[in-house]
Image 1 (cartoon, rainbow, N blue to C red):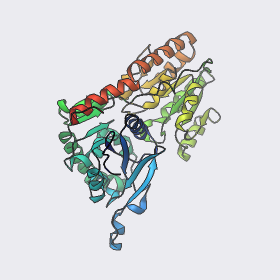
Image 2 (image 1 turned 90 degrees about the vertical axis):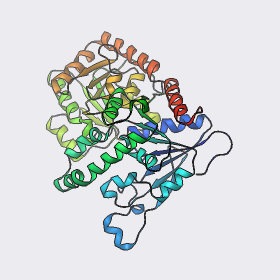
Image 3 (image 1 turned 180 degrees about the vertical axis):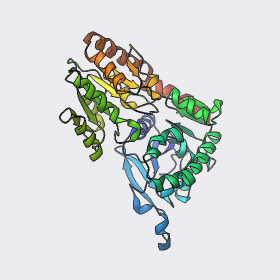
Image 4 (image 1 turned 30 degrees about the vertical axis):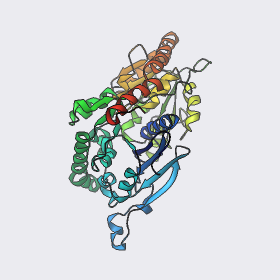
Length: 404
């Protein structure tokens, strides 16, 4: 992970653990885009205690005299990567403090881009005075609202008294310091502006969708087969709403099914399915490889997006590129691309409202064809890799004065 002297630049992507979810998806896209343009790209992420416990040092390990470590490995196929441990990971905020390992990595590269959900990973650049780009999807409060609500009393107390004030200070410093902050949606831009990001530093850069990989099926869509691809055990995803809407559709005589990709169901989730009488009507497909997602979308009639909050939801765009209309709650980022009567419908977060929109489209094949064509058209016109490249180039030039 050293500086590059010849073609391109050495670019360090600072991010969260690159394993699952929307942030790794957009980080992968950025890495490949930059490498295709001749840059040498490395990825570094804060190692959570859950993923790499041995390179972190929580309070109870301090008497042993241990120090945080690093672990080098490949990520996103063949990109060089390194996981960076910290002291006191149980408090979360130390993930974003630049210790000696982070400082060494930052100093070894020419260009630096922080990619996260909330802006916090950008604090590694802000705290070292390193000019760079930050590409994020939400603010601290919105990103964690549902997870905090699910915490037990002891953990909630530590979060509210120690962690939250600390990470809010980190967010404020990051937004005030970095020269260019990119939100994935209009919703994100509005949230970051409300938290003090100067207007002159702030712009919108949507996550692009691969419209060559994700294409409409040549066969007719199977009626009333609904789908959702996400870490649906995350409370923000509000998967219970999708179950309730499905149960309502079936009680009203529609032979609807729901296919879920992206996670394994918890015991609680399976219990909710059974309680609603949906055993046999919900297919849990687990994690699906990126290159196999196209077939998943092509076998859907409608993509259902029941979330409480989304920065953008790249899965919704992948579905649209596949010609699948999206029925979504009003949850932030998807409002950039879910347009009533053109690409799908936006509804209130209530079972009757969601079921009503799903029934309307599933029961009207002509309407479904109109929405399918519109979904593909919007994905190609507004969320292509070319549009992404133009937006990234503007931001890159504003920080470093050259072209990516």
